[in-house]
Image (cartoon, rainbow, N blue to C red; front, side):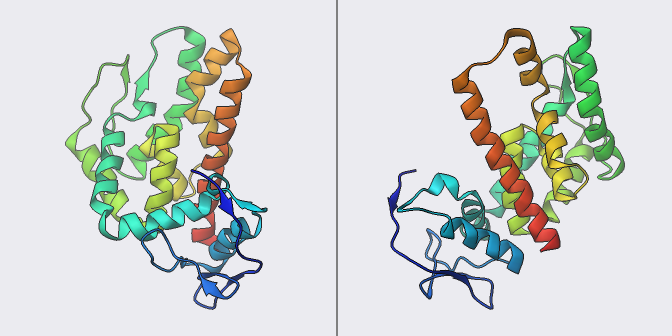
Length: 232
C-alpha cells in the first residue's frame, strides 16, 4: 500500500456516524459512504485520518481498512468470509498439540485449553484436540456450531473476527474476542505459544521482531474495533 499526499485539513464525524474530510463524505474503495454503526467507532476511524501527516499512509489506518472491508466486501461477500472462518475452525491452531517437549506441551495446554473449553461449553461445539500436525476432521456438530456463531456476527464484527483469525491462526480465538470472553493480550499470547517457545530456545532477530510488532498492532486494533462495536 503506497502513500499519497494529504489533501484535507479538517476531519469530522457526521450525525449519521460517517467520516467527512473538510465537510465532504469519505467513500470506500467501492464508492460507498464510510459510515460506522457506533459513534465511538466512527470517532476512532476519524482519529486515524486526523493522525496522518503530510502523506496518507494506509498501513497506519487499520480500523479504516476493517470498516472498508465490512462495507464493501461483506455487503455481498459475507458467505465467502463465513466459509473461510469455517475452514479455519476445521483446522484450528488450538486443536493441534505437540507431544513433546513437556514444557511446550504444558504451555499449549495452559493457553489453549480455555479456548477449547469455551468452544465446547458456550458454542456447544464438540471440538476435538489431537497431537501432531496431521489433519483430524472436526465433528459435523462442531462445524455447525461455529457456523451458527459466525451467522450471529454483524458485518462489522465479522470483518474484525476474520482479521483476528488470520493473524492468530484460530477462528475460535477470534470468536472468543467477539464475545469479550478473552482479553486481547491473553489472546495474542495464546496465538504465539509456539513462536514464543522457539524464541525462548533460539532467540529472535530484529527483522522478525519488526514483523511481529506490525501484526500485533493490527491485532490490537481489531480487538479495539470489536470493543467499540460493543461498548461505543
